Image (cartoon, rainbow, N blue to C red; front, side, top):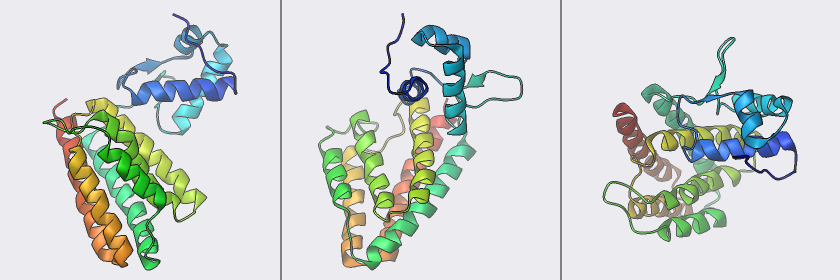
Length: 220
């Protein structure tokens, strides 16, 4: 089957679609992603396939060893803990700035409403429909401090979180109601100007999500 992509920039469009497939687990962890494979799948020149692979490798979404084909990373327990530790550092800094202004981004409020609307929580975790608004809630906190460099760093982390979730196929997620309630608590602390309470709530929130992911990856 020849996959069709929109003609924005062949390389960017190709990279975007491969990224989507990575996050949906259509390309599972450990899968080789070669120039020949992409060129055939998408009916593009091998040079375009190579450029797309290099772009995704630079973003950390593919890994390539010396003289080896690029592969979808297999994220470990140590990777998950480092990703979440780094998330906490960046998001805590954003919360302190927002609390100093008693400011709650409207985008965070809207994202959390979408979390609530994502559906009934499953017995072992949340509906996958809650993943994107959950990620957007956290991203909105970073975006609100208006630092393009921090945003770039954070986007890279979020992409790795999505890879983690694809690797365990959602088995590690918290319940929708719990996610929304903890987001709401963080926002209430921001409104009250209580930075340390907001950070403490965030710490617990990320820790619970992290340990669910760690448990799920350990079971693979």
